Length: 162
Image (cartoon, rainbow, N blue to C red; front, side, top):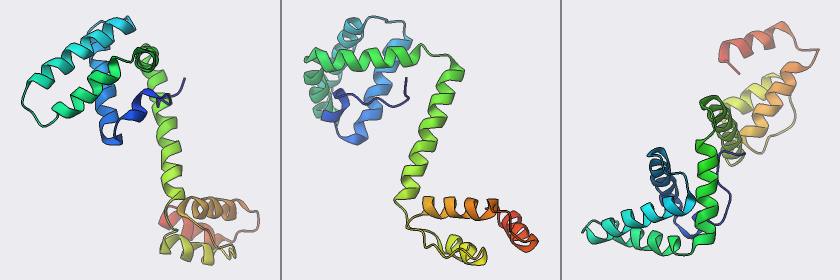
């Protein structure tokens, strides 16, 4: 089991709405609904109510309502959420932590190394120039693990929390 859904259902929605969709389905599940078709039916009724209201999100709810009328992908998504919601709190926390660590690394790989990282690598006599923050962090760890580091370098590391 993974924390993040990787199926097709959410692909048809803007990224900014995907969390909202998952949250609304989870609320229905937490109310005690356990059958995918029942959960989809409740969500369709919620969409109908929101489409009748004059709020700014009625177009979004129309899109969601239409997507729910194509049951295969919707059922797969609901089954994923049911499985995730049935995990213990500890299992959920573990999956969430793994997902967050993975995404943090992904973000770091998209960012250039900081000046502080580059200066520290120079102080550690590292001649490799990292392409991103993640690589810089890896190089710093690698340099600190080498057996021939001197006490001054260790002190710099402890002072700056690298």
